[in-house]
Length: 255
Image (cartoon, rainbow, N blue to C red; front, top):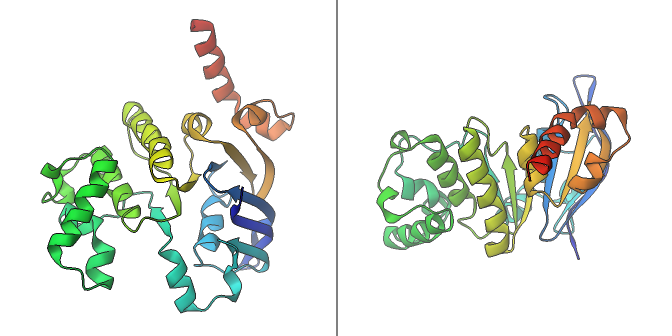
């Protein structure tokens, strides 16, 4: 199995403060890899390096085997075609209809006609369980869960190899959050993509992930399967996941 992302001894300093400290991990092809930690722990800072928005102060970041720091701006733009990004707040364009949001890349960067773009939008919306009736709606006419699904449809519009989800269940009620969880897993199966999920939603991380990375103040505390993280002997990790452990224990008793 190949590593889609490889981070080696990544350090990042901003304004005299170390945001990331000696971070190393790999994300393997086809897996759902979640990054969890308290606010300000450096989760989003890692994804900024992966998509080439930031360069390391020290260390290396490889995406699809390419050293991100050695790439030109044009090469980074080309590589990003293979990376879908789902923003925390959805980041839909309020002035564009749903199909235009989903097909935004093709409208802006290709000469593809509108009919073809609409067909692509229709296909991707089907993958996130939305029908043709939403094609001409404006974002303001959508529920929070629908907005999130449209943003996911936009992220997969170019058939990326890697999808990065930034807080995919943020702002959603528990039932809708679990719907999004199932969608992330379903998309991995149907599109054969790799997923990196940055999340505060502990139940989400432990229900969808193949492996989980735990961050604390810019440092990796632990990496492992959900079961391994739940059994961790590290005091910080044990405290951080204590609520999840109690919920899962209660569910098992109920069964």
